[in-house]
Length: 419
Image (cartoon, rainbow, N blue to C red):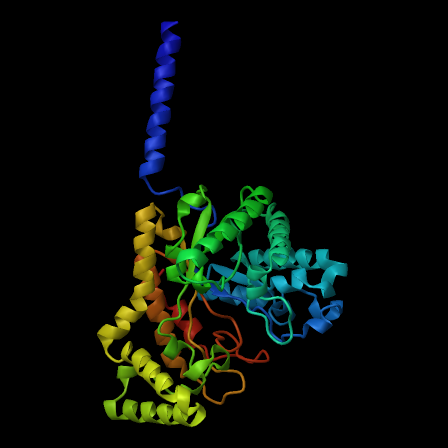
């Protein structure tokens, strides 16, 4: 029949045209659309895993629920945030200690997400793996190196996806793993991509409408994201995340858990060139004296040389600007190459330490606000979504330790951002 054949031609042509459009243009935007966020706390008291079998210790879950209520969440909304990234420690979901009431943990996460939505904020439920410490047996390294444990983690991702699947996908998204501690390129990056495919398949099978948040190897940094091939994930309801804490020398001052000399680096101003040169030289000399005093003679020269190398990345406006811009430019080039829209890119973490636990030095609040502002400018200039680290603790922008209020400078800076 001539009309039938004409209809066939039109349909075939339309299908071909649609295929060309899909191949040529940027992918459709993710269902979950947000702009300005903050990370909530993973733990606040860090209870030892031996105590996790006590429901009164671990519920409600996550632990921030004990100190952050509806009014606190409403205050975030009023300050200009439109979403939060909610870290959930998967170790608690996989621990033998919680096996008897595992379902209650998932239910409490869902309850927490709904509480956030009720305050007018969207939420990314973030399965926030971290390296294991002395008080917990399961961490990121174990998850990635133990095949049986990774299988259990895939199941946990599937179960969390099922838990959030009935929520409004415009309000609740799911992040599959925080900061994979794998190499940045080559075989290690490829191995992470294979694991990510398994996590993605498990989550998508259980939550068909939920936006999923994916990140690359290399501790979730820009280099790791740029090593991923988005064609391995043929799905237009994804957000691609990276973390950036450049320059590390300034953002992690005094942090003991970083290893190396960073724990003895305190007092460097942001930006370093904002003080007279003689003042900066005196600060640097004091830091070098401390590094020399605290390190063995075999390591001393290497540590001092590396300190000089990192300091050189920050000591002029041009060098500091280039150091901070590099991860953004790398991700933007990757997104452009693969036709990924800028608003499907998330700067999932960035920040500057306020005070390391147990260290007397407090980074001046005005300097922290200036740093957060400069990073936000970089993100928004590129059209990326962002979520700062974090609500309380060492990097706290709302609280510091034990629920005490942090200086208001960072939150007030967000409140003053143009809409």
